[in-house]
Length: 100
Image 1 (cartoon, rainbow, N blue to C red):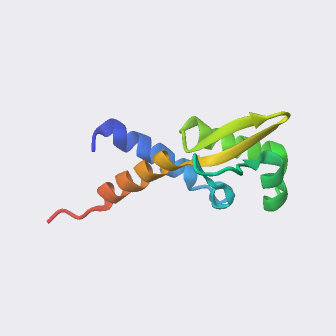
Image 2 (image 1 turned 180 degrees about the vertical axis):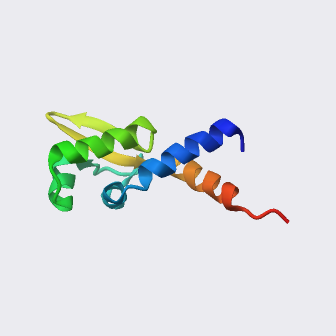
Image 3 (image 1 turned 90 degrees about the vertical axis):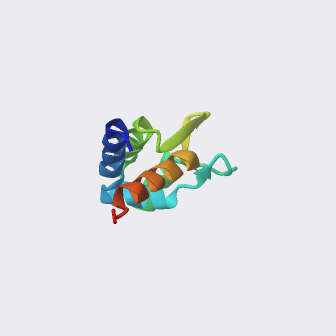
């Protein structure tokens, strides 16, 4: 793994590591398979957080490509980018491998 890959992984893990972001990710479906991405208002209601707080968390996840968004009228709907999720897991697995 290159230094830039390690740097990106560290940023992604730090971003995912927030308790509210983990709760948020647990509610999101994976895309592109999903036909039902979740709106910010629905996420806010389920997490008992304000919409601006949820939007801020989603913006941080979106900046690193962890989630995707789609505007449907006045609402923005979100889902987890399956390819990025797999890449994060794979890189974390590589980083945790023991050398013999």
